[in-house]
Image (tube, rainbow, N blue to C red):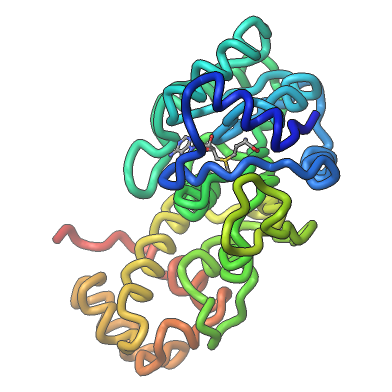
Length: 294
Ligand code: SAM
């Protein structure tokens, strides 16, 4: 299933292009790691797989072979043509030409719609399986956890530094919005280390294959998830400030006064001192009472 460095280079040369740094074009050339990534997803014939950045289509071919349907989103025009030539005739392959993100924090509506409609047809799970371009990893993971349609699992290669942030503990420099949102909503596992030489061209940093499985037991209601998102982003934007300082901009006076007089909360804490359960409790409490506009 893997393409060698030589094969990828030939495909790009024939198309008259070189790998583009700005699109995070580091192609996975290590067959063992690619097999590990696909095997981790345990694909079923009724699964819909989202692949972000099919590139020259090596991983895509395997996904198309194993899944019910693959929705692949590619931003690079030349690579869109390469994918169409290689996979355009497969009935269970849809290529969306464009940016997977429709805005800074959310996936494009066309991608959501394609996933929904394919899932309606097949009745299985929606999974993300991808060697992610580094620029989109964080917003994509967060939006797939918070937004719709619900995703059953993500199996992705990401920069090791992003994996560290996903798994960080309170009080560390890596602990931030990505940590809180992911740990609040999902279980994480690092499946393999991916060294730079597993890619062509080699990036400057280590990567990792991770598995992110949203919890199904008692999912947080939509309003609480949205509250959590706004709270952690608003507060971690000012990491050095106290909770009281940041919440002044995020809550109305009544809600803030309620927290001041509630001894479960210590508003002199900084955001990195509050553990994941603390953030969930805060979001839950605030989401339960409607806040005033403005
Ligand atoms: N899937 C291939 C592989 O495993 O070797 C290529 C992966 S490469 C790390 C990332 C791919 O994502 C490239 O094909 C790049 O053009 C594409 N890409 C980058 N930014 C994107 C975006 N915002 N939306 C969709 N595709 C994007």
